[in-house]
Image (cartoon, rainbow, N blue to C red; front, top):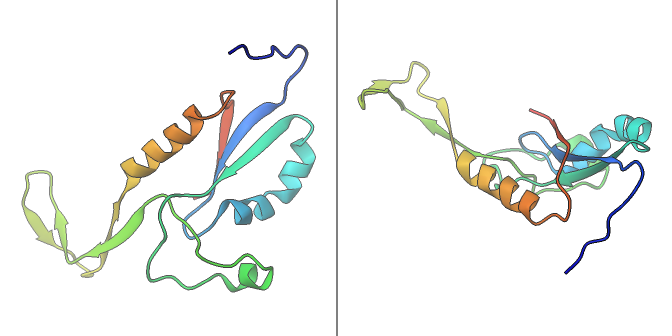
Length: 129
């Protein structure tokens, strides 16, 4: 299969990754002015994270705008009573609720697989924390 070559200037392709307990739709809303400003130069693609956060409240502002849960994340948050140490030992957490994040490598594979399914590569990323 041959792909058509495009001549002339092409838009930069930007993959947009939202923050925790958000969605691509929320990030698009948050970046609306930026997208409007640079839309002639860039094509923005918004990807939802693979995980659904637990123990979180819906963000009322976005629910009121019609953007309803489930919101997504790039990793799962798990609270631990003990913190693993590099030597394999465990240390009691000072607060008993030290966050630990799981599923980050799953998210990396998820993003890479998404990128590999595209017809053209991405030129950059826009990310919220």
